[in-house]
Image (cartoon, rainbow over the protein chains, first blue to last red):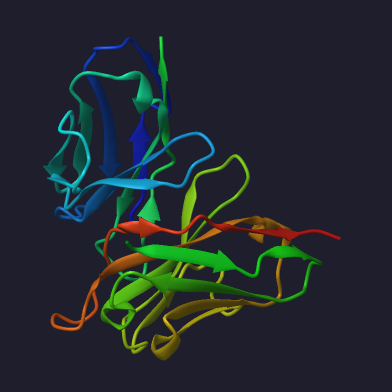
Length: 108
Length: 125
């Protein structure tokens, strides 16, 4: 099975900072990767799919990049409402859709 | 507006059964693959099962294979998850999620663009 490793598991940053979260696959998954945001007590929300395609309605400060094994979610200028846990998800195989373990983002 | 509304959760004893339902509206249900994702209390997201739009293809996580069955009724815009032989580790909020339309290209796994509010399943004696 392909493993997904997210890092860091948690981070604290200041408003306006550029924030980067990474997701690494143990084998290549092309661009079959999505990113989700889950605010405390809320339902997960799709941010990015196909590694770099921004979901409609998602603020442009969010961006995704990568292909193969290494992927990145970037928030260009952190806002207070971005406090959440972020998950990556691989979907290259119908037999094994896998989420990363999550990255908890807090405001410093 | 796309809406997914889960129901059927509750408290069940280990070894028991439960059937979850998801009522869909606001889109052509019969054109989309659908999925179940769960989240144990304080834990991360875990994919559970997926079904293609026509029910021709069904997939399960190893952790539930042989115990859970996904199904759908396109005439009633509904998705189901039959859960048997439940274990304490199945305790979680179960989310119904929408995949992608697969009527032209055939089924392929995908990201999940809409999520229901979830229904809590608690397995405990």
